[in-house]
Amino acid sequence: MTITFLTKEGFDKLQEELELLRTVRRQEIANRLHEAMEGGELIENAEYEDAKNEQAFVEGRIKELEILLATARVITDEEKGETIQVGSKVTIKEEGSNVETYTIVGAAEANPRKGKISNESPLGKALLNKKVGDTFKVDAPAGSFEVKVIKIG
Image (cartoon, rainbow, N blue to C red; front, side):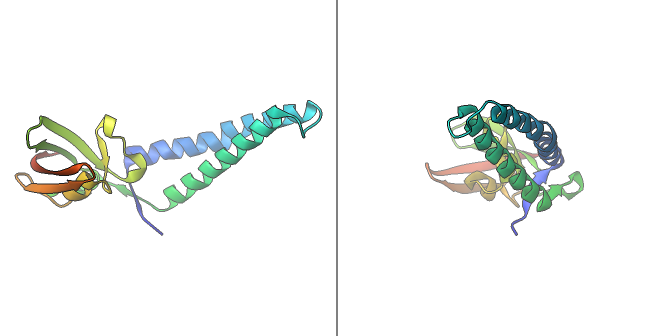
C-alpha cells in the first residue's frame, strides 16, 4: 500500500469528513430514500434515483477516506529539521518572481491557492531534502525554472 503523508491538521480534517459522512450524510440519504420509496413507483422516481446515486458517491468517498487514513503517516514537528521534508514550511524565490511561501504536504491535502503544495508535484519533489541557500532547477510541465530556498520554517 502507498503511504499517504498528512499533516496533523490534514489528518484531523479528513477524520472529521469521514465522521460526518458516516453519521449525518448516511442518515440524510437514508431519509431521502425512505421518502422516495413512499412516493410510489420506483422505476420512474427521479428522487429515488438521485438519492441512490448520492448514496453510491458517499459510500465511495467513505471507503476512500478509510483507506487514506489507514495508510496515513502523520508528519510531526519533531521530524522537521534543516532540510525540507513533508510538513516543512518553505520560502523560495523563483528567478524573475517574487518570494513565495509554501507548506509541503501529501497529495491528499494539497491546495496551491492556500500555499499547500504536494510532495508529489514537480516543485514539491524538487524541494525535498534541500537546505536554505540551495539553488536548483525544477522541471515542470510548463517548462524548467530555477528556485532558491530562502527560509525553512
